[in-house]
Length: 115
Figure: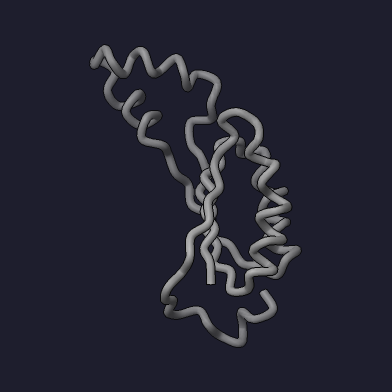
């Protein structure tokens, strides 16, 4: 079992990415999120070191979306990752990473098997 995490900076790609999970029979959870550097730049206006960083994020969206999915089968994982990895070739579009899931509890229900 594996977990896929995506921190998506280019929100215009959200629907396309979620469709890949859906088309492969995988669920996903989305959360509104904000990166540390962006948070520090916005909340520490009087600290000179953060003022310099602010210019790096002027063109970025103010928030990003974190997408999480737990995928049981390795084939589904490969299909999802192979379909999505090109989305992160563009500079600062986001990041995707995969981790093993050693244990999982809950949501293992017949209602979700065809999700």
